[in-house]
Image (cartoon, rainbow, N blue to C red; front, side, top):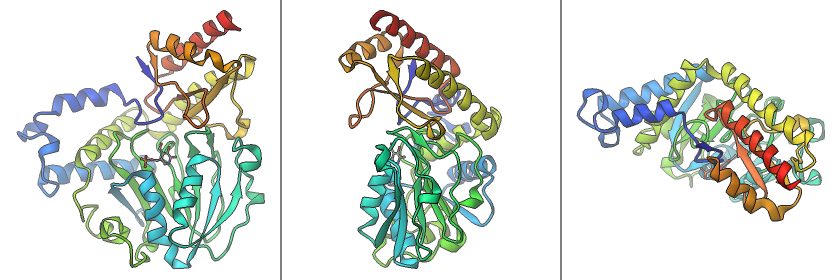
Length: 357
Ligand code: PLP
């Protein structure tokens, strides 16, 4: 089966097999990872390895903390302003689709929020050029969503925000290619696309941004408190951290982020080339802003959607239905989707087009 879910998404089979083997007795400890105290030496080793592996994969500089938190990326929509907006009381947001719209709405509860740019005029099919952004030099930070999972638009460049820290929701493209972490003040991502199961949210935050939390910040969501306690101020999502660590190790063994990028570009090219050559299917996103991770597409006649999905399911291709807000289809092709999955999808799309076109 090829699983095109946008998240929680398909995981590397080797990781699932290892987790299954270790399920009842982790490394001779007599315990499942689920049964370990987060303060015991076994889990502390699992946690430390996951962090070290992520630091190595992403080249995270030593002046950044890595936190494994709960609350998901929607939680971070509040947690980021709670921790950072107090520096100046105002923040800039760039709106490129549904997820960044949600971020703005939540942030407004904690300070003054300026929409520095929006892709609304293009119906969110393109990322506004930085020359059109109206940035406030007094902003505490500039927030972007590096990959809009629903609309399928992705930044293929890093905004230059000068001395104002850049904050990115990387939930759906983290680990898909190398990035320069030092260009960001803070990166956050829910794990359930490229890193593991839902339940853990990774936050990578530059040291100097700690210590500015608003007094109303819940202690479990205070970055400084979590950093001082190695993400163990409260009980961390231990099992999700363990699986994320296995995924990091797997990505490293498969060539790291440069190899992921090559593999992801090859997969996306096959799908977009076919979509562009066909008059039966279409993807509305500007070519330079197309996501390598989430490829939404529509059929010429949406009354065929159900038949398309049924045929796909019968051929072992599942969870292709588009987000309920946009309809159509969406193929999510994260790191763990093999190129064979994309080839099988395109072969089926051709067959369907021949039959119904
Ligand atoms: N941000 C992005 C880019 C996402 O893709 C998602 C989930 O799909 C979220 C935020 C919300 O994540 P969660 O439901 O884990 O809070």
